[in-house]
Amino acid sequence: MYVDADFVLALFKEDDWLKENAQAVSEREDDLWTSSYTLVELLLVSYREGWNSLKIISYTCQMLRVEGETEEIKAAASHIEENGFTPFDALHLVSSGNDVMVTSDQSYEGYTDRLKLEDIGG
Image (cartoon, rainbow, N blue to C red; front, top):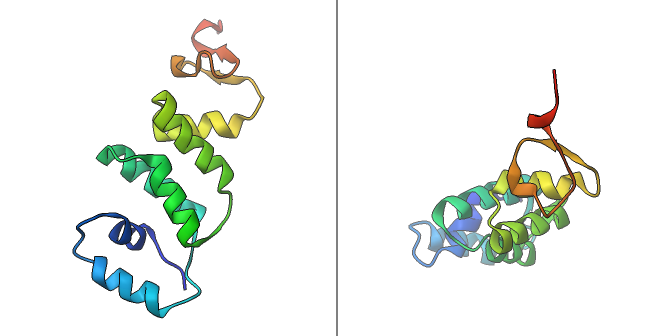
């Protein structure tokens, strides 16, 4: 049975109006799973709410089977927490691997090689 971010958030948050319902489903169903898209949504929510992104992503990966890429999202969560990246900047950084990034975003300085878009003549 597929669960979305609302389910995870209800279990993760200390006080959520759906916590008991989510716990009941969690206890009753033994094949709960989600996708990497839920992890991306959790990155965004945790960033907005000021929660520890790595903690909620790790919690979700331990609690549920996650279909899709998880290692890149865990790495992105680390960059959010340890280096102050925004969720999408962290995802772009991790996705770029060892490739040079073409960007005007200076937040990548010191983390990857960057072709400075602002310095390219037209």
